[in-house]
Length: 109
Image (cartoon, rainbow, N blue to C red; front, side, top):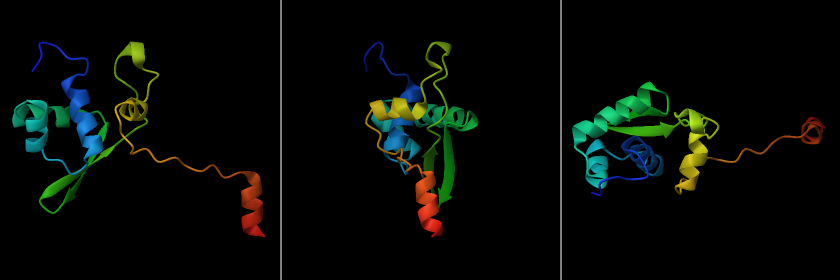
């Protein structure tokens, strides 16, 4: 592993969880080069701060991302996590179709 990286361990875990919501802590640890214990601490930090959610599925966990929270540093607080993850290749944010007043009137007719 290099002496320093552009992306923190928290961002690495978040980006991998975003790409593979059913990934295990052991798989994350192997991919990132951390111990499983370190990964579990990072997951706990992300969960406690509301960046991820967890849903128990059988013996595993499926993670969800809260894309509307902002980056944690004051200098980048205007950037949403979802936008950051999209820059890293995440395709999880779904575009919502806005309903205009005309659409609503047509639906009632």
